[in-house]
Image (cartoon, rainbow, N blue to C red; front, top):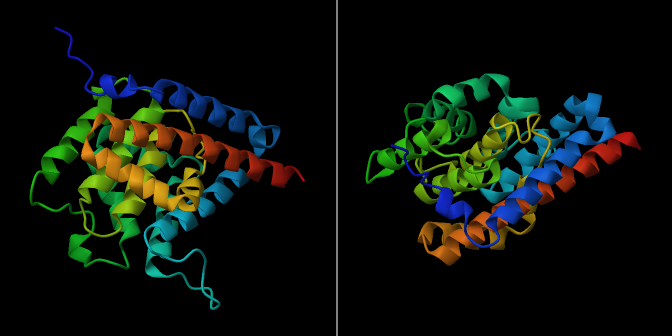
Length: 248
C-alpha cells in the first residue's frame, strides 16, 4: 500500500510549483557561471559570510564586527553556523541525511554557544508538542516526501520558526536548516545561494509570511512557500553578483 506524500498538497498550492522551479533554475545558473566552475570555493566562502551577517540581523544581532574586530554573540553564532555549511558542509550533510535531529542540535550548539547555558545547547524544549513535531519533520526530510527541495526547505524553515524549539537562536537555526536542505538535496551543492540577504532586506514581509505559515491557512501557507522560493531565486542572483565581482 502506497502512503500519500504529506507535503504533496502544499506543492500543489497555486504558484508554488512555478516558484519552486524558478528557484531551482536560478541556482543552476549560478553554478554554471564560469567563475564558479572552478572557483566556487571562493564564491562559497563569500556567500557564507553574507548569509551569516544577514541571518544575524534577522535575529537582532549585528551586521558586522565591532571596531575592535569582535562579533556580538548572535553574529558570532551565525558565523559559526555558516562556517559549518560553507562549500557544501560535507560532514554536517552526512549527519543530516542519517539523523536530522542531531544535525539541528549541532546547529543550535553553534548558533547559541554564547547565548545559552551550556546544558541547554542542542536541547529542544520539552513542553507542548515540540518533540512530536520535530520527529515528524525528521521523518519528512529522511524520505517521507518527494516534493522539490525548495518546497521542503520552506516547510522545514517555517516549522522551525513556528516551533522555536530552543527558545534562543531559533531563527539562525531555521535559516541554516533551509540552506542545509538545498545543499543536501543537490539543488545548491556548494551553498552558493544567499537567500538570507533577501529576507533581511524585506524583513517585515519575511516575518509576515512566517506568521502566515504558522496560521496553517491555505493562503498563509501559499504565501510562505512562494515567498521562500522567491528568496531562493533572489539568493541565486546574489550568488551571480558574487561571481561577477570575482571575475572583475
